[in-house]
Image (tube, rainbow, N blue to C red):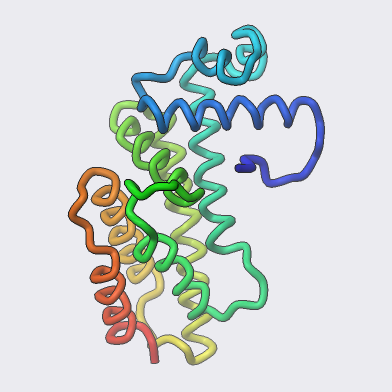
Length: 206
C-alpha cells in the first residue's frame, strides 16, 4: 500500500513508507495500545533511532499514518477521470456500503484502511491532534461531495437538493456503517446498499 501521493523514489520516502506500512500492520494486529516504537522498528528491521529521526514520538507517527489513510481513502474515491457526478457518488457509497465486512478474509486494501480509520478515530476523543486531522479530513470529503452534488444538479442528474446538507447526511450515514462493520457481525451490507439506493432514487436522482 502506498502512503505518499507523489512518486519520488528517495531514501527518505522509502524509509517513511516502510515505517508507515509497519505501523499500519501493528495497528491492525494489536490495536492502538499494542503499538510501540520498538515493535515498529523490529518489523521494519531498523533501529528506533531511525524512526525518531523522522518522528518525535508514537503520536506524531500515528498522526501521519492517519492523515495518509485519509488521503488514500479520498484518492480511491475521487481521483478517477471521466466520471459523471452520479458515477462519483455511486462509487463513494459502493466503496463503503457495499464493501465486504471488515471481518472478511482475505482482507482487502479497503478493509485495512477502514480498520485503521476506526481504530484511530476512537483515540480522537482524547487526542486533539487526531481530532484535528479527522475534522480536516471530513471537511475535505464534505467539500468534494458538495461539489459533486452541485455538478449533478447543474448537469440535470440530481434534484435541486441542498448540497451541503445532503453531503452531511451521507457522511454521517457512512461513518455509522464503518463503525458497525468494525464492531459487530450483524451488518447486512447488501440490505444497507439497497436502502441507500432507494434513498438516492427518492431524494437525489432525477
